[in-house]
Image (cartoon, rainbow, N blue to C red):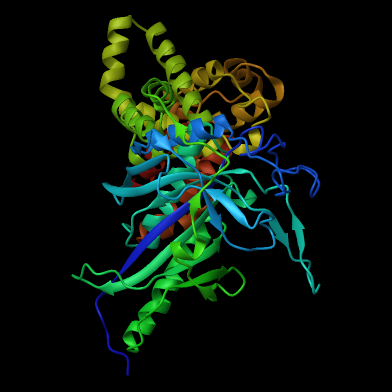
Length: 499
């Protein structure tokens, strides 16, 4: 019989980020992932005898800049090391990495988790070269090796074991993805392997500080996979603890998307197994104070800063601020639309009264604008040139919506028409006959006709089935071809039912 234990999960993450430099880490080969197999290779990245590596300055700069963005201390005298192991996709028999002098160490990342800010420590950030790629044809008894990826600049960000739930780990990796995109150092697309995550998972009795043997979980290729794999591994280890057979050695396990389980791969290596020693062909990397200061300038607009500014300047709630932060293009567009919207406010009255009105209503109005953009502007509406409708037109249309000239369904119709015709919102409102009907007399007449044609629904509402009232509201909107003011319709239906 299993013994129930109060256990907590201890999770540490190793996130690998493929940098989008033009060339590879130690040679001049093209660093693109859309090339035919084994076409972007040379004697250096395939490990031919007599070749010498040449470090990529851009990759080093981006690693230091990312370390600064994560609040790391910088090793201003760093070095590269050889990490020795054999694998078919590692032609040299060793990987050029960093051992005891990474570019960054002792950083932090603060995240909003369940309404409160949590701090997760970053142990180190180092730079290395990626290995090649093994391809396993279905049903074949052989594997293929593509060395295009060999030598690609790879940044590894190692956290402290500060995560207690799969949700925290997922949120951390999502925030790292955002930071990489804001800094412009990587596309960080998990599906394309630009961002990969391994997790070290162990359990311990609550209240203890001791760390127990951990399992390294690999092959987590999506945010959903991170959450599911960690949840499975935690429950797997919990079962071992409760059966009295807690893990005594470290292991490496892979997440199987088909079975939704982690599967044993091999025992986990220790640093000594890799026989690290300094890379003899690359001198120490010296980073001056002046260069660090220059790189720090590139870390000014980070997701956390933008999130804070949106909440403070516009009064957005956490959901809308986060939605805009996850889409930098839409966030900039939002601010342009708000500027246009405020311009129409000022044109409707004096600048002073418009400013007072904005301060009194900015949270409500900004929330409405953000909601509209996040709900209506989908990725399929964007071409290679970005958003399809100028912010000036969206600002005007949302001002018309705010002032009751059109209703929400009409705003969607006008937006779709603006994409196709490139005409302005006011002209389209008139052309499509979408001006909102606020004539209470006409609306009341429509209500009476709808109620006369739906006597059973009216009876249901009067016997307590209040949800049926929305059917009547919908029928009135249909009768007025969607032009009626929904608020006025709601009030008119309610009044008619009370009579």
